[in-house]
Image 1 (cartoon, rainbow, N blue to C red):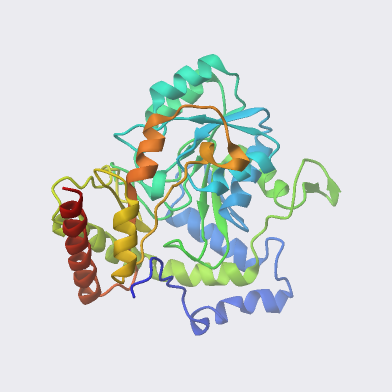
Image 2 (spheres, rainbow, N blue to C red):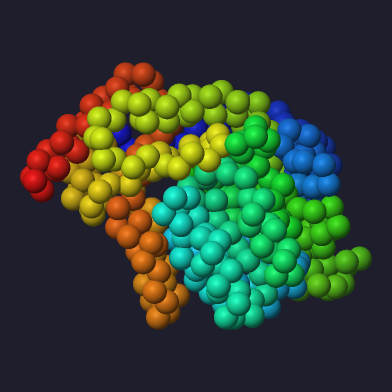
Length: 364
């Protein structure tokens, strides 16, 4: 059985020595020496000028902290086509999701629909999602947010280490761009995340994930959202290996795109160079029959993001989001591993092609 996710976390002997400064100072959290070193390394590698990296305990914590630090209130315009953590973060920040449909061309927020939504409803912020880690430039979205005079936060959970169409690292969009370092992500440390944030907002964000404290007293709304020194040490070890992980995953994605035989299979939109946590495709019809057959044939798959959030009980609305609902029915995500061998990939592609042909034949 090929699992859907096969995390690649460096073994203890790759990061235990990196913890030595924390043990020397007896400081294992609260922005200790190892976390500080990782923040600096992430800034030097990925962050554009004018941005700071702030480590957080999870991508969800980063989203909550960004919304709190920006003092966002009321509705937050966002897609329903996303992982539940995005909407959960909005609710945890004391706000309410305003779901907006996505574009069939980009699988991300439809800017025309977003502009109409902003004209109908006053919102406190826009929360954009880089769908499944895609890495397109967001210049038009940023211009729209600026014209509407609302903050823009980017949920880039699966995008750390990705580049946009111009070859620039992602992380420069909006007021804050939030990355996950969950074990399932390409840059995985177990549990963790990072926020690339405007310099002017960095210290407020840092206070927000430290209970809102300033000089020992509450100064802003906050909670405990810091990253431990242990997870930071793992992150330093991942940083030494990430280029190889990204190169291998890019090759896996290339072969999926070129070797899957179905002519009517819709491959992911061209959007820079994503890290490829997974390889998503859209089928011509419902994905569930193919998903069941693939699992039965030994290939783990996942149907992100279904059901879409506006059709689930915690976030149910009467919104009509036809593109979202259509994509949620048709999207299927295939496994990508940082250590996937050519033999494994060849077998998976062969199984996918065979099962797709069988299901297509049965439908015909």
